[in-house]
Image 1: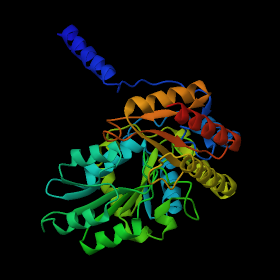
Image 2: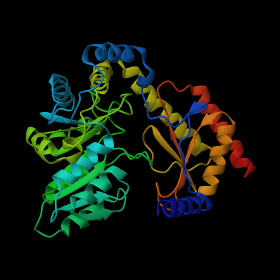
Image 3: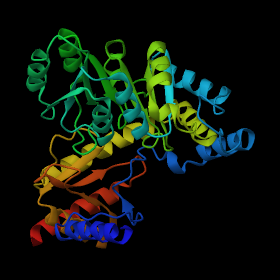
Image 4: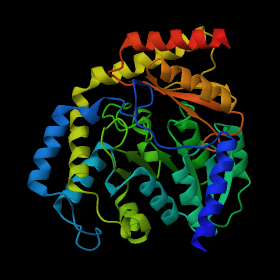
Length: 377
C-alpha cells in the first residue's frame, strides 16, 4: 500500500514538472531581490546581541502550551508591549503568521457567519476561513464596488466580517483601508487586517497602515508578523482584551501549540524597540522601491498596481517568467519566478523586493540586465 501511494505521489510530481509548476527550496544566491528582511534586522548585530543575552537568561524553550507549562512573565510582558505598539489593549502571540491567521479566523468566525474576503488574501487567511465553516464571499481583488455588493447582499442572520491585507504580497499594492472600514460600518461588518508586509514600515510607531491611516478604533484586530521587517519570526494578533481572551479559549493553533521560544519573543521586543532609530532605513526602503518601479516602467515593464517595496514584473506566461529568472540568476541576482497556483493563471511574474541595504548600483544593474533580456526576446 505504501509503495503504491508513493508511486502515485511521484506521478503527481512528474505531472507538475511537465506543467512547469514544480517547486523546491533553494538557497539564496547573489544579490537578493527576494528577501522580506526589509530593514536588515535579520543580520543586525545589535539585535542578535540582545537576543543572545536574553536566551542566556531565559533559556531556549517554554516547555509547553501557554495553557499548560508554557505560560510565564516573558509572553505576558511581550504581549502587553506589542499591544501598546499597535495602539490596542491586548495582543496574542503565535509561533508564525500562518498560525496566527488560521487560529484567528477559525476561532472568530463560525457556521452561519459570513466572511467577505479579497480574492488575493494569503493562504493562511483562506485556510482559516475554510476551517471556520463560515460562508465565504470572495470578491475580486481590490474591487470596492464588488465588496459593497457582497456586503449589501448578505442575509440578516450571522455575524459579518471583512478580511483584507494592508499590502498584498504578490502585487505590492496598498489596500484602501479607509473606504473598506466605511463599507463595513455601513453594513455591520467587523474588519480584520493582515499587516504582515506593513509592520515596521508604516505609521509613526511603525505598527502598520492601520495606524498610519488612523483606523485603529475602526478595525476588530490586526495581524502582525515578525519574519519580515522585524527580522525574526512569530506573529501576534492585536485587538481588545475580550478578543484576546476569546482566542485563548478558541484558537486551536494557540491552544495546541508549544509557546513561542524565548529567543523569538525577545527578538520581537528588541526589534520593535529599535524602530524609532531606524527612520533612515525605512526611508531608504521606500525610496529604493520608487527607483526600481520607475526604472522598470521606463524600460517598458508592467509592475501592476505596486506602490510598496514589493514590485512585481508581470510576465503572464510561466515559462517566460522562469526563463527570465534564470537569466537574472546567471547575472548574479537572487530573483524568483512566481507561478500558479500561488498566483492566478496567466499572471506569472518576477516578485522583486527591496531592502534598506540593497545598493543603488545593483538596482541599476538589474534594470540593465532585464532590458537586455527583453531586447533579446
